[in-house]
Length: 220
Length: 147
Image 1: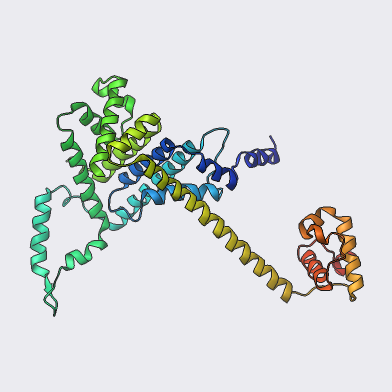
Image 2: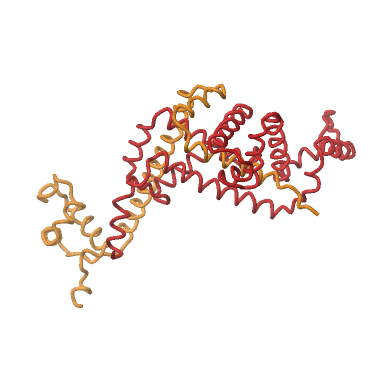
């Protein structure tokens, strides 16, 4: 196929702004809820202290890239919801990579993170007592709290640890969900998890649903 | 010595997998999960639709601003540029008529229907259009003609 024909084919498949607007207006409550849930979990994976990564920002970015033609919606190949989900997947993966780069740049050690929460709180208290300053108005200022924003990656690691522990506690009597979570956290696929744990596909799907529903409920 | 746990990576893997599992969930499952999290699916849906429509609106607005900026730049170029046009208004009108006749596709972009006959075009309009054509390279300058 010539370059011209290839370009023509791409042009034919790109959606116009009017087609995109029309697709938005035709989205059902389930479609919109699905987009919301998808964006919610992808952003939650980036952590509570991620820099301005919200589900609204993810949805907006996905649509803006489509409108700008940076991501083409091939109408013949995928529906609008599928396209937005694929675009959000790509953007949030990129955000996750950015977050990793931030961590490397910050040279954060893991030792303090592997300590228990009580130990971390105790260390913070000791440090704080040594450096607390009183203003003329009698207000106590903690340089540690004031400097917290300088070390966002450490906050993200602590928040991730706490959230994972909360989820594990929530499912402490549900072995299958714990196995699924353990597998997912090691980046195993569903098939691999089923292979390792001996779960059937139905059991695996049911465990994923329980995990998803309860995590959503717990965080919200 | 075992490697320290990477909690961020673990959370990322779990949440990204849960997100991906939403893709295959049925519509009723999705709605049910929204309800179970204590939210109203209709309200959520409207919020998401608004986010998307706001993005479209912002995109249109940005396009409009860019187009206005480009128009302004073109006007400045025309006002400050040097053009080689016939000396009299009659000659300029004849030249425009010839160019448009030779290139009818140009007339569509350059002239609105009411001006197609040229009768309502002021001398200034004619001059401005010739300048635009010359700037676009659609009007030969005396130098081009010699070549």
